[in-house]
Every structure is written in structure tokens, then in C-alpha cells.
Image 1 (cartoon, one colour):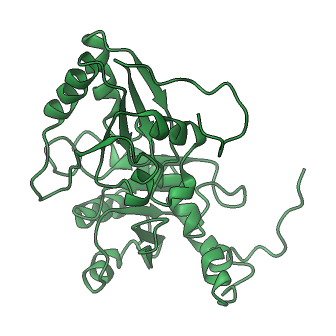
Image 2: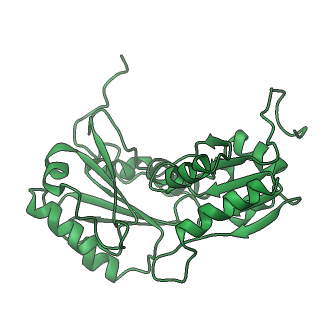
Length: 281
């Protein structure tokens, strides 16, 4: 282990092992110490499209192999990626599989881990900060706030075919969850927003779209469920993006901490119109 980390009984990445690791939503500073430990030991790093180049700089001794998948672009097939991990491990390499966000949150990490275990390859799982939580936090949007919501639902905006997921019960989600966080939903936002409105969500419900969350290229669009399609069409936002539906979006009016660092004053110290915040306890 390196002297840059505090003294601790850090796990050793052994030859023939694969560590399946989350790299966080983008900002290299959101990487976990276990992930940094893995980067410093790996022989090979197999990384996704959402992993920032600055993170790979922490593994100068390793071979860097790109295995990113992006909608509408030529991409590696999932089975090929999984079997590549098996081949490298069976060749005695110390393998780090580095995935954006958390590998088990819409990252297909579970599928890769299953394949490895089926081939008797030992694995270690290293969680990461998911974009649906960390990315929204960087935008000043808390996914939970006790004056706003006691529930949050995380959904994917597309299924295995690339289409909007037909297996989701949008009626149930619309009724049962005060805040909805949608991963990879820009392509099908017209259908998703229409389904939510049809299920009873108001057209004036706040929506935020956070693109390239936590990176220097982060952009945030604040809109409503009824206007999100037209506002996105008129914007320059492109995937990857996280979409948040619910009143917690209004908290950005006071919690846009990045804007405040740049001298932008809060727009509204009481975005919920409830007077002073409740005391702790």
C-alpha cells in the first residue's frame, strides 16, 4: 500500500482475483480509499465510459482497457466484457473492474460478478457513490428531506433492449414515491413524463436534469414535468444524466452550494414555504 493513505490493514489484490469496484459519479475526489488501494495494486484496469481519466492516473503501473458502453454508439458486448475478466484472472493477473457510480446500481455489476463466480474466479465487491445520490447532491438536491419526502424510488430509463422499461409499474411508482430518480432516462423522457402525468403526477411538479454530474462539465436544468421534454430539446444537455422528479428539486433554490461558491446567492431561503426549518430532534 502507499504512504499516501492512513495506516490500516488494507486488503491485498492477489493474482487471479477480480475486484469489482465503483468509481463514483465522476469527481475523482469521490473515489473510496478501497478503490484507490485497488488502483495502486492492479495489473489491469478494465474501465467504463463514465470513469474519469484522472482516476486512471492513479494506476500508472497497470494496463488500461476501455470497456465502455454508450447508447447509440459502438460498444463492447456485456458477455464479452465478463469473459475478458475471466480470461485475465485465469492468466494470473490482478484485475480491477472499474465502473462508474456503484457497480450494483444499474451498472450490471451483478451480472459480471455472477459470471466470475461461475468460472471459479474469486471476487471482491467495492461499492461506490451512486450518481443518483452523489450527483444530485452536487447539484444541491437532497434525495431525502424530512420536510419533503419519506420515500424515494430509483429507476432506470431503459431496459435490456434500449427501450423504456415496460416492466415498471409507473402508476404504482407515481402514487407511491414522493421523489423519483431516473437513471439513463433522457432518451425516453417523453414517454416517461407522459406516463407519470397519466398516473396522476402534476404537470407543474419540479424536475431537475443533471448532466455530467460532479464533473467540471456538470449542467443542471430545472424545469417541470409538463415542460421537461421541450426544455430539454431547447437545451444543450446530453447524456449521461440523472433526472429527479419531486419537490426535493425545489431545495436547490437554497442548497446550490456550487453556485454559492461562485458568488451566487440563494434564490429562496424557504423554497417550501413552510417558515423556519424544524429544529433537530
